[in-house]
Each structure stands twice: as C-alpha cells, then as structure tokens.
Image 1 (cartoon, rainbow, N blue to C red):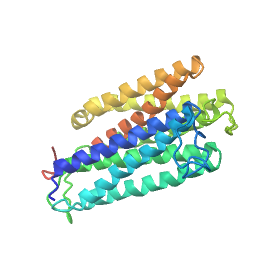
Image 2 (tube, one colour):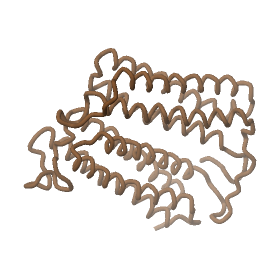
Image 3 (cartoon, helix red, strand yellow):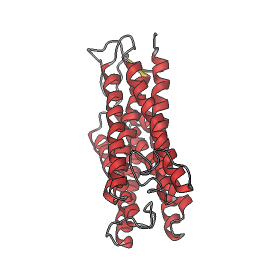
Image 4 (cartoon, rainbow, N blue to C red):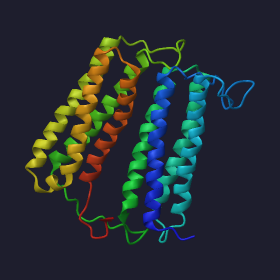
Length: 303
C-alpha cells in the first residue's frame, strides 16, 4: 500500500485530536468524582473486567476504553511512516515517541488507581500528556514539510536572527510551562480530587493560587514584550503575525476563566474549560517557538 505525505499528515492530525480528547475526558473523570469508579486495574473491579453499572464506573471505564483509540492512532502513525517513500527519519522517530509515551501513560494511569488518586501521580499523568501533545504538534508540523532527502535535511538560514527576540521566545516557553505546572499544584490542592477520600497536596490555596497567577501575569508581560519587538522586526512580523495573535487570545481567555472560576468557587464546568484551555495555551506557546525556528530553505515547503 502506497502512503502519500498528505495521507500521513491526516493520520498525524487524527492522533493529535485523539491525544487532546483523552486529556479532556480524563479531566471529566476527575471533576465528576469518578476517579475510583473503577477501583482496580487493568480490571474495573475484582469481579468485573468491564463495569458500567454505575455512573462513576461508566465514566472511568469509557475513558479507559478510549485509550485504545489513542493507542491505535499513534501506532498507525508509526506503521504509515514506515511505508512513506522516501522514508522520513524525523516522522518515524516522533511517531515512535508517541507510542512509547502512550504506553507510559497506561502505566502511570495504573499507578494513579493503585495509589488511590495520589496527587503527585495525577500531576505526572497530566505532565506526560502535555509532553505527548507537544510531540504530536511537532509531528503534525514535520508532516506538513516536504523534504527531498532523509539523510540530509537542508534547513537553510533561519528567518529570525534577532538574538533578543529568540531569547524572549524561549522565556515565553519557560513562563508558560511554569504557569501550567503551578496550575497542576492548584488542582492538586483544590476540591476536585476525583474522589472524596483522595489525598490532597498540603499547599494553602490562596498561596498556591497567587503563585500560579504570578506566572500567568509574567507570561502575559513576556507576550507583550514579544509583540512590541516583533512589530519592529520585518521577519518577525511575518513569522509571528498569526501565532502571537492566537497565543495572546488563548492566554487572555484562559486568564479570564481562571479568575472567574476562582471567584465562583471553582464550578466543574469552568474547571473543565480551564483544563482544556491550559493545553491550548501551552501548544500555542510551542507554536510561537516553532515559527521562530522556520528557515528559508526551498526544500522546507509547507503544503
């Protein structure tokens, strides 16, 4: 079977969507208090492998079963990458990382259940999900790029050569990552533990929320500095016009949701939106970084 680059691109986009979806469904498991709806692993309970007899069990079970969809999506990326002509080492490597990552998530998921929803294992679960989304994003972007050879990848000269701008882009990744990480500590200290008996982190809510908020504001300040400098750099305007607008819009939306949920007593609906958007914020930051690394090589042509 011949696999086209366009066909492979579609498979990477499917994997990307599947990985994003399971993050959202996983957050719903936690927010609905269904984290121990299946109190055993890999079986749902001691007596049943699959159990949908209660709402909590059904929610947790469906999330577990969706892991099969995710696994199929990332495995197909590997198999199809091996059939591309010419073969692309970058696509093969990135798709293999996704498979290994999903397998790692399965193990972490088991640990989450076996430890009674220990908050640190939950945080590890989410951080690995963020890593997988980053790899999936890079896989999609690499799949969009046509390169003539596998052994030698002409990269050309980077469009963006401003040292200060590149440093600020990297700072944006750091501050955004810190905001996401401290956000997991807020969740680990808050009321939505996945089960009423689950252990919580020992942080004082007001303190950890303010810490998280400080990194969000630092990210916003970094974004404004980047926008200001990019407007003065012709090449940067070309690179960042869309990516910076996307990042700014998602960041402001996420900040508004964060403050709103805090003042409304963290209702489940808003928390679910906040979790889903936190992934989008990180991906938009990665998108800004990706655009800053684009080159002018004629062999790096976007479809």
